[in-house]
Image 1 (cartoon, rainbow, N blue to C red):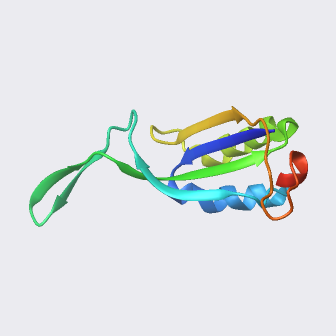
Image 2 (image 1 turned 60 degrees about the vertical axis):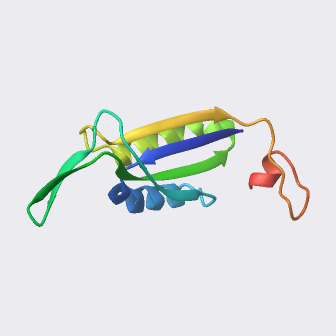
Image 3 (image 1 turned 90 degrees about the vertical axis):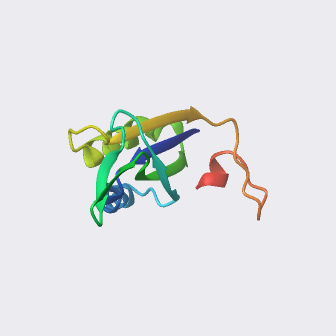
Length: 113
């Protein structure tokens, strides 16, 4: 099993969700997060005052999947969420030793299906 974490632009999430549903990925955890990287934030103006926004809004999408599907999901995230500009995000792939469904006690692949 693998855990895929993707930090993406919020406006790209609806399209990503649709693509993942098309291939049968329904189990997701989605969080609103804020961060910065090469984008370095941005400058804003409010009532004539200039201010810097160091952390930009992002969406973190997490899913635990069967290892053999990881490459396909990474490809879908890349093609769906890329705008070819700085700030598109990152994808992290993490090995998962085990998963246990609390309600039934099922473990491994059965717990994430």
